[in-house]
Length: 479
Ligand code: UDP
Ligand code: UDP
Image 1 (tube, helix red, strand yellow):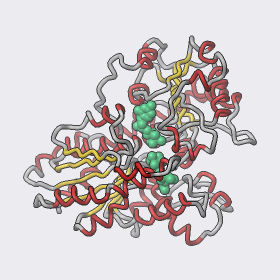
Image 2 (cartoon, rainbow, N blue to C red):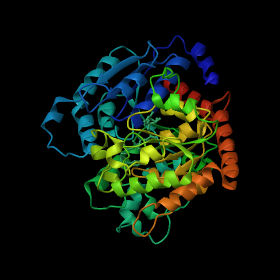
Image 3 (cartoon, rainbow, N blue to C red):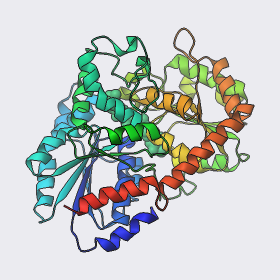
């Protein structure tokens, strides 16, 4: 973000500080690391990044992301709190994350107190799961900000949901008509973030209690940009009851060490014709049922298109519970893919069972499409690499993202379910062919080009996101 550099000179005599608290999981870590890098490189703020993990050591993927941080940044990595050992087996992953954050609070207090002691003012940035730290920040006289790692439409829903909860007593799935949030696309109840449609569940109560706290912060930094969601951004900025909004996106992975021959999938991509490969991945946590994996495998094969598929072991429950086990599964695709699938598709497909360097895959000249779970980081990474999408949302706010991508921005093609809630092989194959070779391909690539250019402008000199970033930093510097 070149336009932010003048701030570095202007503010060089100050010692203002920002602490960024990151919730466990890659989807939170990656954008937080990038945001921390921007602050460290383009301003003279003293940045402390506090990461949290649910395991006792960092994974290779986490470590490689953290290795990209500049040396002058103060990094504090909190590994699994000891109390996690006492949790009953089968505790849902999302609950493990919430407990990790809660158990780390005393340690966080010590860290924040030591930073405050340095005779300078401090701003605390938390992400959408870290709002439990807000009371402590208030007690210590620290201003709090939210780093919302999704889009403005999702943020708008989060800010409205406490009111909706008070007004509407049924399940959101049964809302008589789609919800019309100011400046946003109409959102049918079935596409609300999981587990919101399930009133009465523990997850629902947690979502409401988190969302209630989002309006307590001084400002909300959003990983989106004005041109992507002009209506939603305008409405949020003009809504007086809402904290100040700073859309600073797209904030995506940068400066990753090139995966020097380490990754088979990159070598394989090197050997494929330019613009010929569909990348298929459901993010760091997403898994499919066995029946759905089988349909996807056949759909890929029937499409005849080249593909790179990150295939994870199936789960047998609803996709929303996939997070529970996804991380711990040992993958052996031969055990769960159709018999001889890998042999039959050897000439044009590659199946990977572990973490891939996604930014490198998406920026590779051979990659021409991305079948995605619509995680917001994946979406932004696709936008900056100009790769059109097929939307296959699973959980969290992914269905909402899919509405934005398919119906709003028209940079993704949607899939139609059959009566049993499955995407069938014929449908999968049809949509893949549309994206990769049909008339549709030209239209969607053109749309993606427009959005890609808007993203480049937003973070360029005097772009909307660069301006928001500078406003935010100026606010922090003026304490
Ligand atoms: N990612 C990756 N390799 C993988 C899977 C995921 O590099 O094999 C990265 C991806 O590039 C993105 C993040 O992990 O930055 C996933 O975030 P997203 O919001 O897309 O989905 P989540 O995993 O949170 O559901
Ligand atoms: N969530 C929410 N509002 C949102 C997005 C997510 O309340 O706008 C909830 C979501 O339903 C889930 C929890 O926050 O129960 C955790 O989301 P997750 O960690 O999956 O977010 P992600 O990693 O995709 O950013």
